Amino acid sequence: MSAIADGVDTTIGPGQEASAAGVGGDAIVIDPFEVAGSDEVPGLNEAGRPKALRAYVVHQDPKITIIPNFVSDSEVEHLLEISKGFWFPSVVGRGVYKTNDENKDMQNEPSKNRTSYSCMLRSAQTDTVQSIEHRLAHVAGIDVDYLERLNMVRYMPGQFFNVHHDGRFRPKTVFLYLNDLPDDDAGETLFPELGLKIRPRRGCAVMWANTLSPGIDDIRTFHQGLAPRTGVKFGVNCFFNDKPLRHWEDVDSDLGDQEDIPANAKGQSRWRVVDPGDFKVSDAMAKEHEPMQVKAFVVNQEPKVMVIPSFLQPGEAALIRSCIGGEVKENDELCLARIEQRMAAAAQVSLLHMDPLRIAKCTPSMTPDGQVLAGNNYKQRFGKKVVQIFLNDVDDGGELRFPKLRMQIRPMEGCAVVWSTDTVHQGRPPKVGERFVASGIFRENPVRSPNAAP
Image 1 (tube, rainbow, N blue to C red):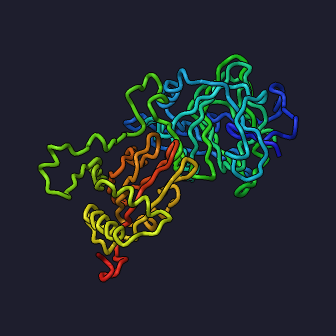
Image 2: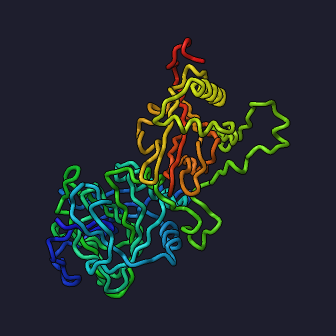
Image 3: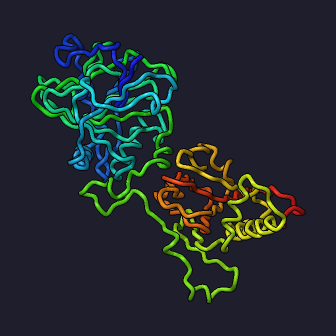
């Protein structure tokens, strides 16, 4: 079956494209405000966000749910404001499902099937966006990590998105309407198989499932965005994926880097960047400490994250790197043992609680260890405390990220980072070259024999 994506949409059949006008004339028109009737509109909290939501099921099988007043007027204005100057022609993704991986099976490209404009927001781009994202996750019953970046759409008079499906890899869709259109101006969302049209109403949402079961699309939820006749229609596509894309975004994406920030938000940054080189111990500071002492810098208080710029002595990083796939000599074993003791001291945990030292190499095509690979088993994989050492400088990429803290640490040879697993980490691959790290995982209970500890 051929596929199109914006998402991803699946056409009715090869070469078949529905006309943009004259479709769905006999469909039942659902007006979200009429559905709500005389029900009291929920009030707003101090932040100008809805205190409560009321959902109305307007079709049982498949379930189509209407949520009036999902976003407030101030939230609508905020979304429209941050999208100014960032509209581009909408694309669809064409291809054939072969691997059940939409990134491999489909390529985004323009299409006569879709003539609207789009603006892709960043995940948690602002506090308002983040609040809406968590609200969407709540009503969909799916963790926010599975929510794709919000994709705003704009339909000028005559622009449309013909019959399509949002994709078998998207279990659920929520579409937000950001403005009203006159009753006779069209612009509705049409479900031709169900004979339903949803009328655009400012702040309202419509939600439906795209699948019957994992990987099996529900063809009854084919739909289309009808062209408005005279007005401009604004909306937001909110797609829930079958993979936790937000984790992958933190690994692979440069979103939030300065060049990606809207002009009206310059000076903001998605990530707080920590460069260990800024904390390097000067010669004067070194004279104040005993030999073999290192200086630690707390870069986040709660949960505590520490950076130790000069953790390794000259030559030790190269020694550790040489241990990958090689035979460890007796003298090297003694040196590694001393480094492990130093790691235990930095973690303030007995060496008896430390797993064998992990040494890893990562190339641009690989995903470093971290939240993505550990998933919900993060603490099981990383214990209660971690000491990670950068074993080489990386010119571009390779950062150690803490997604919940919105902080990333640039790699610098010989620098150690210490954190408790009350927060999660995710490494990034290098853009070019290789990234080497050594990790000490400290457990709640002893994992080494007292006689084996150096």
